[in-house]
Image 1 (cartoon, rainbow, N blue to C red):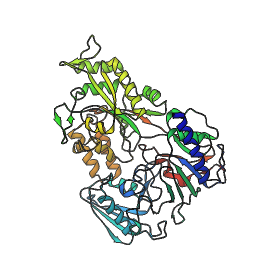
Image 2 (cartoon, rainbow, N blue to C red):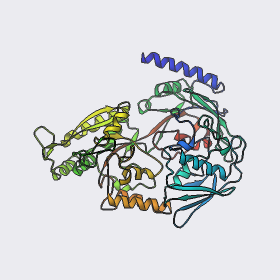
Image 3 (cartoon, rainbow, N blue to C red):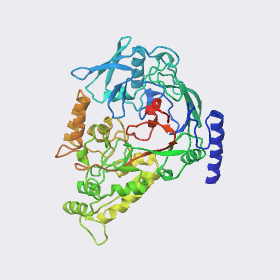
Image 4 (spheres, rainbow, N blue to C red):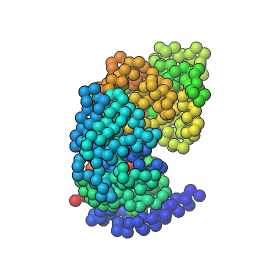
Length: 530
């Protein structure tokens, strides 16, 4: 049945691509003169293409421009903005925007559109958090002033990720019919199958080489089959396909902070959430358990085994990003040191092989999303690595609905990874305990909280980054693996793509968590080899 389904999908792809783009040569050899590309680089956006509800947070909004943007080294660059200023108290941000920008329908973009976008975003109740923005106003046709409730250095990342929408053309259908000032415009959306986009002739920036892009929404198996048939130019693949040779295509391995790790309930059991779900775990609340696990786990082996070598060991939620503290890297796979930590913590070896303390076994259940093969593999391998330490770990797959009830009291194999340091705050702040998927382990440290507040209230990203680093480890304490260790971060996934061997996509920045289409960030620079 599975083979039959794959065959049906494969021939559907062939038919679909042949109809949507007849000029691209087949058999894995693209036409170097073609200004069209066919891509299968991610799933269909469930919420559509509306930046006010989150589109573009994990990659280029493609159809819309942003006020600011990142370069490949995470340095802030201007996009729609010509300059910006922050008041000495950090409460007022004034942004001057370009005067030569048009939306894809030919209408001018001005300050009123920026004001409308941020007002609409704040009122959307979406994942984009603008609760700290008191108001936003147009000072003149091309000057916008943002007034904040309190200083917030991370506000700059909202200016990087929030695409500007047109006030005159925004309605209930915008998510499916986006109009923007980005390099491309949407011309066709076949639900469940593909979208077709074309170059926006009104775009103020660099004219892209590729004037037409077709994005196919394919399963992993179907995408790989399409690559083998020469029907796509770029396709994202899982690590299980990475060692397969595909004629005319090359493997692209992109470093990411798309991480996986175990979040440990930080407090003892006994409390409940407002919804009545249990909080805390008496085993993982013991710091010697958490420390021993972080020292004893073999991260390199997890990279080699669970993700076929396509990744790196992870030590934090933000490895290699500007706000990461490299001092938090630890020596792992040290079984003897891990045992010493447990001995010093009062966890005694028993004849049964599971340590005990105060009549309690060093045992817990590690949960993972049942439909996630990588997290299942990581969980099972992790459990095996704990046996020599005398820690018994049982693994169990659950639905996300079940995890939402159990994640406050049981360790869970989670994943994060963002280009915004606010993620650090959301995961580790005392103020976010029990809010959605943030800080589900109820971690709290007053010193860490103070550093993070200082980071938020800093008036420059450089100053903020120093406080984010201190929150991880200041030489004495912090939330990192050498501090309170409320997590055991394990691996960073590499994002893997097969791309036409004649296609040049240039240097990419570290990829975020695997939502959106982050590989399209610099797509206007893509071109065929000369």
